Image (cartoon, rainbow, N blue to C red; front, side):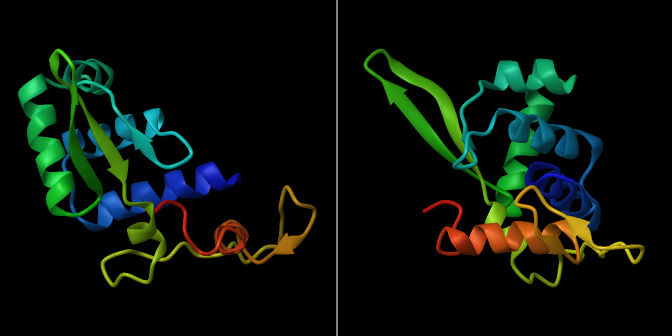
Length: 141
C-alpha cells in the first residue's frame, strides 16, 4: 500500500464516519484526484460535477458541507478578467491527527509492512506518519 493509497483510505473512512452522502463522498474523492503535493487543487464546479456525475447545484452543496466539516478549505481566486475557479485545499492533517470522529486504520495482523524505503513497519499508516515527520510534521503550511 503506497502513502497515496493510505491517504485515500483515510479519506474514505472519514467520509463514512461522518455519514457523508454519495455526492459528498464523490465530490471529496474528485477533489482529491486533482490535488498537487500541497493537497491543493482548483477544478471548476463544472469539472467537478462532470467527473463526479452529479449536478452543479448538488456539487456546490457538497462543497459547502465539506467546508463545514473542515475537510476542505475554499478560497476564491480572481484573475485580471474577474473571478476564476476556486482554490480548494484538502485538510489532510485533520484526517491524520487523533480526532475522535476519525476511525483508526488497523494494522493487518498477518505480517509487517515492507515500505518503499526498504524498512518494515507495523502498518502502512505508520510508514506514512514517519514520512510526514521527516518533513517537520507538516504536509502543508
